[in-house]
Length: 262
Ligand SMILES: Nc1ncnc2c1ncn2[C@@H]1O[C@H](COP(=O)(O)OP(=O)(O)OP(=O)(O)O)[C@@H](O)[C@H]1O
Ligand SMILES: [Mg+2]
Image 1: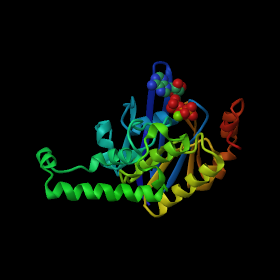
Image 2 (image 1 turned 120 degrees about the vertical axis):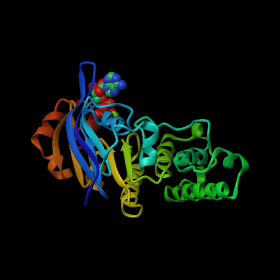
Image 3 (image 1 turned 180 degrees about the horizontal axis):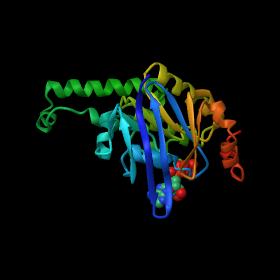
Image 4 (image 1 turned 180 degrees about the vertical axis):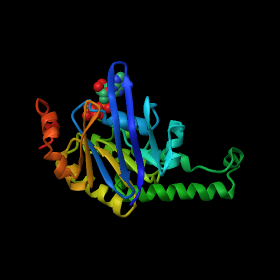
């Protein structure tokens, strides 16, 4: 196995807060890798660094062996990195199908004139987009919702659409920021099955942030625990959960779902 994503000694500060403090780890091709840690640990900030929303003050980030620090956020999807957001980000006044097609934007080829004139090439391309999106709709059982507007959908379904929007890009690396937050036990079980299939059937590498340790243990190969921007523990789910440094970091966390030994 070889590293698909390498985080190399990365630091990011917000004023006086060191949100990410000399963090290094790599995600192997084909792996499911989880980031855990209390609120404010720096997990989402790491995703935002990989998405190139922030520039690290120190360190390097490599994807498929090449530094992506010179890449702009809009180039990231084209490289093969897709993500979901902790607070779902979808077009509210558009349908499920339209939201998934937007995800395909990076695959659009052909000239502007070609698009206007609707050449055979563009028509063929449009069909390809449709096929890719239909595959995702089937995979995530979204058929009943395809023509429904996002604004009218229950939270659990929006969450699935967000996953679908990322999958429609056909990425090599999928970043999931709290895929199970706010979901029922049954919905979380579905997420676990999907993550397994995303890895096995689609061959996509997954990096996820998640507080639900049951989900983390059931799908992840390796886990990195962070606290206050620093690396605490890296290993199998079992090793990390039993690491005294990790248990210590969670002591005093009042929020029940935050406890690593849930
Ligand atoms: N845009 C920002 N401006 C200033 N500070 C920020 C910004 N984004 C994050 N922070 C700070 O950086 C630290 C890490 O935040 P981050 O959102 O990465 O945590 P997290 O691990 O994702 O937490 P949670 O589990 O609550 O989602 C926190 O102290 C947070 O307040
Ligand atoms: Mg977060």
